[in-house]
Image 1 (cartoon, rainbow, N blue to C red):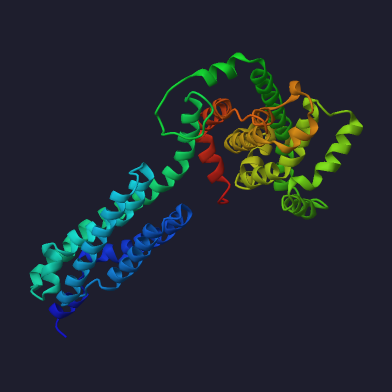
Image 2: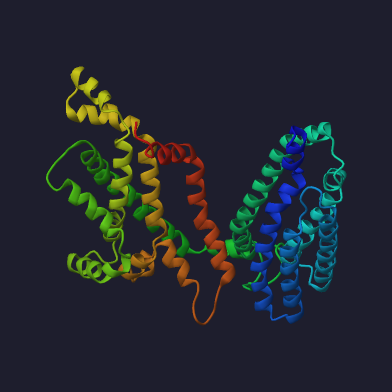
Length: 415
């Protein structure tokens, strides 16, 4: 076989290469979207959805190879048929944002198939009219174009994940700024700050906020006070029971927190710590301590021992080595650990609900839950309070972003 024949058999236009992947993706997405039609109980749309999935599978199977002009024509016909069915379904829908997005996964892939399979590069490739120079040009074109297609595909996938994350947040914000307490309606159809005014002008929210701040900050400070020396000890010293203790830390993380709720309650009642900030702080510290110790130990393992040995030779005792060498280098890990401890206490609901029976001692999660009752659901107030509660967390992540990246990545590789 000559070199030109090998190049001709090996070369595939970038459009066909891209369609081989994305038609499979389109088939899977449309197959998943059939569940929407099942929930809507629309038999006609469900039937057309099944037909579209079958046609996408047939289109993927009919993609041409070299010298297969007939299969190319079949692919063009299938693409046009899918576009027609997709436009019919779109015209029969309510034209909501979700419906447009859902039918776009039918119309756009099939339109790209029709466009790409009918362009000159694919037409010449399937009709066996390629010269050696044309193949060389096509390979160079593939090299330049395929990276662009991969970037577009990657960003498209990431955009969908972002939308899945952002849409619930937008819905909550819309409810918070909408008058009344209804959950329905279009996003952005009305605007009102009545819910924020009601929450901020009331005394309960500020009481819950102060309680959450006291408990969360106290949990972070007490947890770090215990976890930092414990993590350093587990990282640097060999002592009896070290491995057993570390295994025990991992073991307790395997069990759900609800199984220790009754013992916790009995202990707090015996010590007189119900309806107190100290009781919650102690409970949260015990719960978060194993994770904090493991995180800090992993980071301390990455700090070279030679630095501590050098400080010892310079006249530092063990405490000075720890405070002047190890702690300054551990700032990112300590910041990450403090943030996770703060968030664990800030978002915890079950223990706060069990240990606190007075409205004056409610934390924010328990206070928010009290806005939803069996007799009247104040969804607008609940959404406004949820937005306000999330702001401190968002600001913390924004301000500690650099420490989060350094702290989470530094303990991953030792050296």
